[in-house]
Image 1: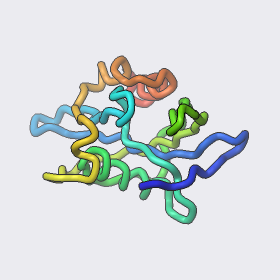
Image 2: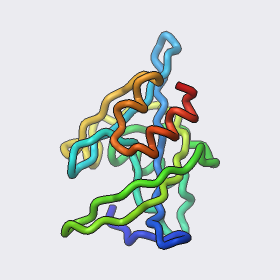
Image 3: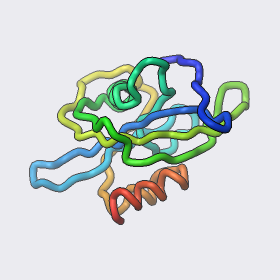
Image 4: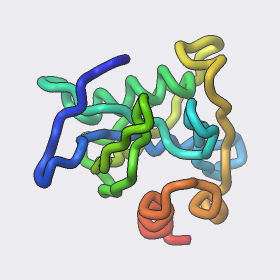
Length: 146
């Protein structure tokens, strides 16, 4: 969904993200990551905060569109991280991302960005080593206690 970036304090782009937690039948949990469309690096589903839409609702929408995931999203963010988002035309913007926990309850057979991304589950202990953004890795280590 093409949405003009809202700006927060200091001119940072405002984004929100889902941290999708999948539970296996044996009770073990993992984090579902997606690849970015441009560089193909691992990250969590995220997108621009939309004016008038709760950030947690937008995070759920991004998880559905980018990874085909449905679930229950917390109304309170787990934390915040920053990264440099690459835009069209070689430009970039520094973004602040609020991250919301999402308990995955289902997976769609087809979804909007299915042909543009890969999705994969990673164990709690390795997910921070796989993501591309260093500040996201730091947040994951903190909230997942790995």
